[in-house]
Each structure stands twice: as structure tokens, then as C-alpha cells.
Length: 180
Image 1 (tube, rainbow, N blue to C red):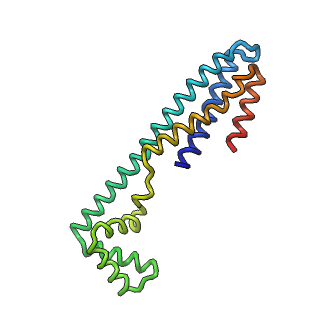
Image 2: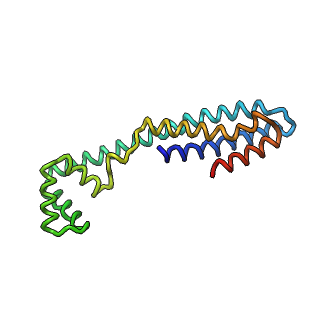
Image 3: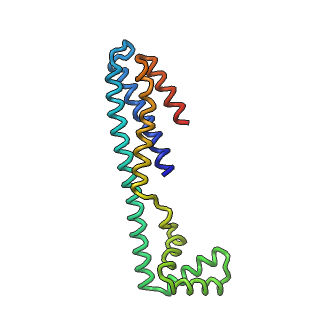
């Protein structure tokens, strides 16, 4: 969730600063007349960015899990179709990790008697996949969406208190500082 939060906050900062500075220039905020347009467009951008980032984070996490499940299904089929070859593969992987040949063979054969554990180890060793490494799609959605909304709100803050070029410059400085 931390990755989603950092990505979301930075996306919100950049996207909404772009919106408010563009609308500020287009509505001649320097003259003081467009602050309401800036706020309305900035809030609309904040909501749109948060929904977009939240749904993207959800779909990304869900897709990762689906790819994992597909790869593990293929690995399970390989284990069922040619168990000796899979045992030999795991033995070789163990040998690459420093086990002696006899010890690696024994370990692979013992693990093969526990198909679910064997599958998890094969997935981790051969494919670099682990079920525990996948985020919850719902947590990713909440983290990505909420952090985007928070980041997107930052460039709006000066427009609640002032207008014109002062608000644009303050928005820029505040957004830049928030990035770091």
C-alpha cells in the first residue's frame, strides 16, 4: 500500500497543479476574477484523479493475482504431467543454493510428497512468485485513491485564501515542497 500511496500522492500533486495553473491562466486570475473557476476545476480534477488512481490500483493488484494464479496453475499441471522432471528441477535449484546433490535430491523428494508446499516453493524459486507478495486489491484501491485525493488537495490550498498570481506561485511552491 505504501507504493500505491506514494504514487497516488505524487500523481495528485502534479495533475491538479497542472489543472489549477492552467485554469488560473485561462481565467486571468491575475486580475482576481477566476478563483472560483480554479477551485471548481481543481476539485473536479481531484475527484477524477482519485477515482482513476484508485480504480487503476485495484485493477493492477487484481491482475497481478490473476497472473500469479495462471502461472501456478501451469506449474501444477507440469507437476501432475511430469513429476520426476519437476523434482529434478527443484533439486537443481537447491544445488544452486549450496545444497549437496544427495541432500538436494532428498529435499526435493520430501517436498514432492506435500504437493501444495512443493508448488509454493516451485513458484517462488522458478517463477519468483509468492502469494504473500500480492497486495489486496481493495487496500490498493483505498491507498491509491485516498493518497491521490490528499496530494491533489495540496495545490488547491492557496486558492482558498488568496487569488491571482500569488495563489499560483504559492500553489507551485507548496506542491514542489510536498513532492519531497
